Amino acid sequence: MPENLRWSFQHIADFLPTAVISRGQGLAVALPAAHRDLDSIMVPGTDPDVPDVTELGVGPDSSVGSVMGSTDTDGWMVLHRGRVLAESYFGEMGPDTSHLLMSVSKSLIGAVAGALSDAGVLCPEKQLTAYLPELADTGYAGATVRDLLDMRSGIAFSENYLDPFAEVRMLEEAIGWAPPAAAGPVGLYEYLMTLRQKTAHGEAFEYRSCEADMLGWVCEAAAGESMPELMSRLVWGKIGAESDATIGIDQFGTGMFDGGINATLRDLARFGALFLDGGRSLNGERVLSGDWVAETLAGAPDSREAFANSPGDNRMPGGMYRNQIWFPYEGNDVLLCLGIHGQMIYINRPAQMVGVKLSSWPLPQDAAKLFATLRAFDSIAATLE
Image (cartoon, rainbow, N blue to C red; front, side, top):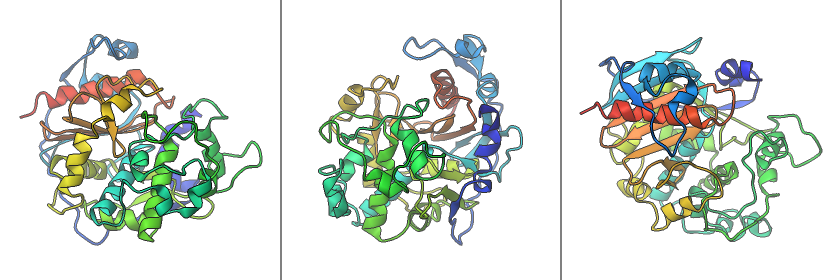
């Protein structure tokens, strides 16, 4: 129920099984405060291609503070050149609160895939069957790791969160996160094996959570480790995180890769900072290679065309999707990690800024709140040097 979302997003481990993603033994990277009044920065709402902030009842020209205060925010912060310009929490959430990330989880899985590619353990151009031969008789036969990274397989999978019979909801039933309406596959991997192909692999972009789940499975098979171990060793243990992360798991201990990770606001800012310095963390440790980050930023020659041809209404003209990350505009200045119900990591490379917002929107998708948040962070970035 919508009225329970704020509590449940901050207490996943209280009612669902989870596994720990260890921060490791290293010191947390300090985030020194350099607080500024960002609330009063004005946010224009005049783009004809996206919902206007007036839909939120906060006026045609709103402030950052009014946008954050009217979009069911649990916490938000801005990091500029490693210094915290703003950090605010609402309700019971605080700096140590672990919050469900929803599909921001996908970007973390994409980073694990990138680290494995850098190490020569995973090849994006190989077919999935090179790592999981059991997929030969499934809809994923013939698909490549690259197809998963960019959500360009031809798998039939509805992401309609309000349809109880959509594949995204059937997945939740299979992993035990929702009561099953009828007998069906049990466990994430068994469910993925049932998905069928509807179009050729490698064509238009279509947002499908199953792609991140299959990518997580392939990463585990290629490396011979579970995702919590992989993510700790390759990503979370290198960014100078303050806290362990957690991931929701199915009946067999398999991670819910597409949306089950939980982490703190501050640690998400540390993760986002990787894309400001070519894959290095704030403490200078190499997490992703410069080549992987550059290739993420560049996309494929047809990435934007594939995005434009998407059957979904992405409302990001000129944008693209690459390596489980959104690029909402033409060019590669701004990157987004996005999750339903209002989860966002905003990365602005020219401004050297990371913005993070964790929320409890009543509806899974709300374009007005999404684009108001995006413009709020854009407006902050425009004031930075």
